[in-house]
Image: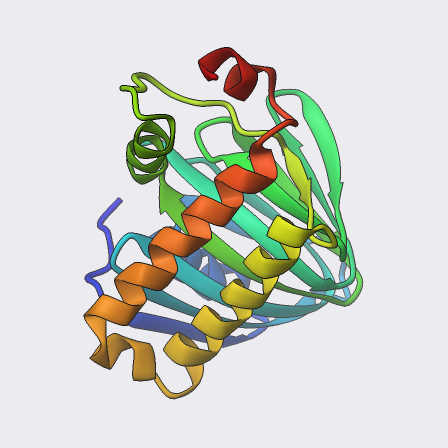
Length: 212
């Protein structure tokens, strides 16, 4: 997949599944969107490539299925605002809903189903960036892939801060693009987001406890 250049943005509004598939394939990974029923769907989607992160904001009505899988190691993270989505990954099924953040290794993603109204923010993070920060936190090298917990609580301290910071990023990148004018601030926010993500993971993952 050709990666979008930092600062580039993509927008979709409508109900054409082929056009939406093309947009999502440029933002995340090669994929296909299908309507669940004859009534179709409507979608509003904005995506900004922001250095180490890709930040998306989406609102859906109706029913649709996303078939998408990345060839390289990326984490897809959802911060739900309203509504639910069913995520299938590595033969597991998970409900993404408000109050719970969801982390997906895109190399194992199968499909995502939305049936009804749904709004969420999303982040795309290269796994290599997460590994580098984890190595710094642990003060020891971490090699290979890491398996983050599938979900984390957005109501607890670290998760709540993660949710708020994601909203700040989405506003500063999508609405007025002010953060794109300040690379230092954007880099600090991006690093802070990954740090909060790992803090939310702390205590939930056997792999993290093994590192410690």
